[in-house]
Amino acid sequence: MKRSTVPILFGLTAGLLLAAGIFFTRPYQLHGSVIAPPQPAPEIALGDFRLEQQAGNVVLVFFGYTSCPDVCPTTMGEMKTVLTKLGSQAEKVSVVFITVDPKRDTPERAKAYAAA
Image 1 (tube, one colour):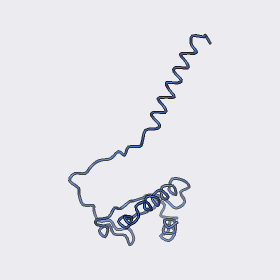
Image 2 (cartoon, helix red, strand yellow):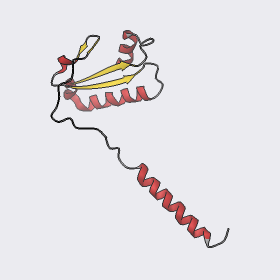
Image 3 (cartoon, one colour):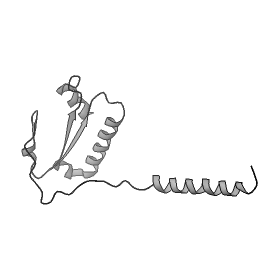
Image 4 (tube, one colour):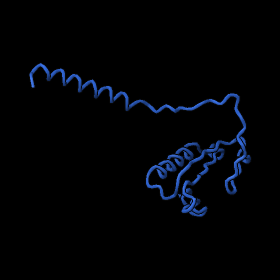
């Protein structure tokens, strides 16, 4: 390699590392839409859960399965942390776990999983 190409390669490498560092350290931004004016949610009934009974509360809906090895337990743990940080305000939050594996996830198994 010629001596004059070393500084150029070094500069390019440093620039790429700097750009990657800036790109990968940006805080996550939620992408969504505002529904204006707000519309009432349709009635949803899941087992003994009725959405109409949650008026005035926040409802977090989580889709997963009890044999999920990584993302599901991590997300449920994050939800538990959030509810703990909310303190008494957590009473106004309902977490609804909806299985994507109903053949294996019986109501009893899902309830035990969510409680853990």
